Length: 253
Image (cartoon, rainbow, N blue to C red; front, side):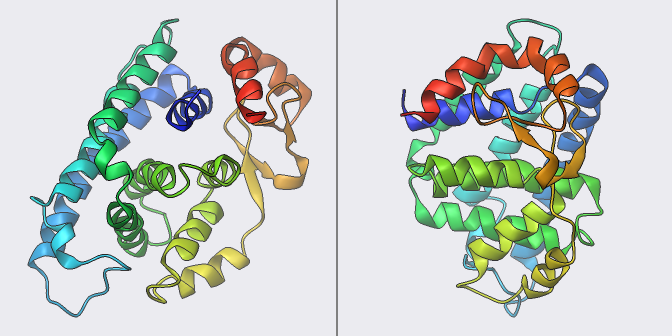
């Protein structure tokens, strides 16, 4: 199985939410689309002294191909959030929708400048989000960081898996942004200091709550999903069993 398919499976397996969470996510994502458009317009019309975190001002213009395709990705995730979470075919629908995006944008996925633009855009969002306290901006950052990581680590599955898990927490988001912009600017230095003071936590794939990283254990089957206790893993099994063997076999490739 190719690298792109692995990305699709991991994204699907890690984002099973109940109906209430899906509704909240849909609302936040819709607002994030509006934020993305407003940010692009504001950046394009502002002065030339601001930092673009390794990218360039023209790429933030609403009509630039990069900006349009970033917005299309957020819209695609919005479409996924609208799927019926109780429908047994949701997994296949989500994979099909996501695969279509990557097929249609293959040329950009392999474009290093597009990749850096995504991290730059997310950095700009972070710096405007009051340390991720603005929920809609956090939603936007998480969605686009998945896209950026897919581009950057397309042939490095272990790093990709780790960093995708990391962006489930504030500390992980900051660390990714620091790493991906460090050679271009020092705008994330303050964020780096904030992250160092944060507790090392991870998200349980079952209940979606955060726990100290050292208390989370991998699923013995796939060695990808993490849970905070056996009971939570057992309760999540009816969802995870669809992807467990598949993820485990891919990890051995």
